[in-house]
Image (cartoon, helix red, strand yellow):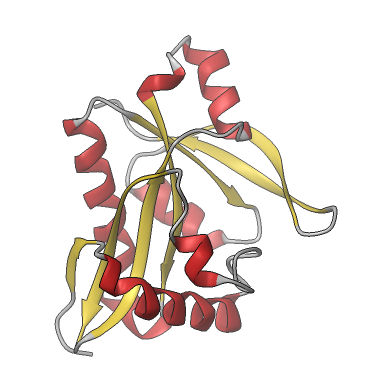
Length: 170
């Protein structure tokens, strides 16, 4: 794979990011939602900022920062820290196609989101499904701290256990 560039998401990236999302779902079973309408899922009104990775003219990964909308990780962090919800964002919709993973693309996307959060005085939280061991290792290597567990609800009443994390102190 040629060199990977991480840059802010642009509207013209939507089709390529949706294609990458579907590819990741087919290989990894992630995400568990949004695959039926990937462009709509990636262009949520709750998005504060987003980035993509690109290699050889193709989108190979994506990450978003989202406004809190009642996520378990948000509730846990606010309860534990006393933080104002206005100072919290959710790191979400992180995915990288398998061929780009050898270039630390996921790490680079998360680090870009963390830089944005520091610059905007936001604390990041997220939840990771317990089945996604590689993602859990990534966040732990980047210094994220476990703050508890939650149940991630999706689809028609489906649910899966997830571990909640908070980003390192800015």
